[in-house]
Length: 400
Length: 85
Image (tube, rainbow over all chains, first blue to last red; front, side):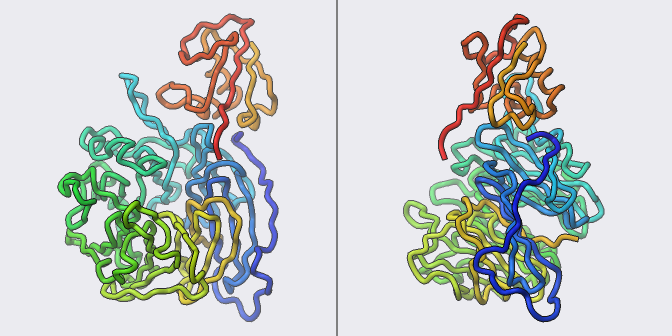
């Protein structure tokens, strides 16, 4: 795409949302940002979160891995994109998605003198930096790399020595150790108390922490499990799927790992497997992890079948979200409104999100192109869009 | 020299045939990028390798070596190997 692109998408009322909002304004208007294999869509909600106007597609035909609003200014959007046949790039909007420009220098590894250097296949995860660092963003790529922009996403540079550090390169493994779409660096987390306190995770490569602004990182994998047969002491074999930090208790992190659901309470460095209290017939395997914006004891997961050949679909064809309200001691099934059977869904690690409303609104997108939302913390679900392409990521955002 | 631009890259150039100059393929691609910023990285990765689904032909022959010398009347044909769903 050329650097300056005019938006060319229609805006119409989303199917399934036919009633206009009534009553007083309930809260800020939430938008759900949907990144798919064939483009991006914005679902702009009314104050009640009952009515959603669809805005899209943007970048029709492009693979969009992540679409994120900068919460610090409420109007800048970054989209990690590529077509299947062109190199990766970042698109940027500073007017809430009306118009877009391409980054002038997308994330790219340094050129290697020996001709054996890596190349970024796609940017996978976008994360705004600390509130005190406006315009600073982080990006995680596939193959695993960590990048930073200091100018709102216009230009990007490799960040931290890990991209080329021999030990980290060893932990990153090879493409054989990664997902079908390649190994990924994801779950980039900035401690809201300290811009220099960072975490990230790698699908193949474990969880890592920095307390010095990224100059150095160290593994944070104690207590985690690996697939039977692998050496648990080898960081390479650790496969975190999604890690989240609790905004109101930044010493607590939840993780959906390949091998189960875990919780970490700092200053401990020992993860605890809290997924063992999930029902045995459901298990605690899955991709996404979502945490409550205010209650650090509450988190939501979307279990999938991780048995035998690793189907990665809703166990028994009966999709459900599970919630804990007590930091993982117990879990409650939330499936009201969801199909009762023959719904073999997969929800990818970035494809479930929460807004900051009260009650919290939740949403998730399936690889079969359905977008579901709840206005009451998962008590009841409504399908707000069908027939989308494979959904890679969803985010709940509030424009200003 | 003439450069044939494939459909997915035409948003950069607005045309299917453009002009670029250079003594080698590498120089031509740099000149293309100067005229149409960002286009080169969509075809060539940061290690200066032709991307997997991109094909570049000169004189009917596929070229992988960016150092290939070019004559002023050579035509560079850039093709996208589109495939799959």
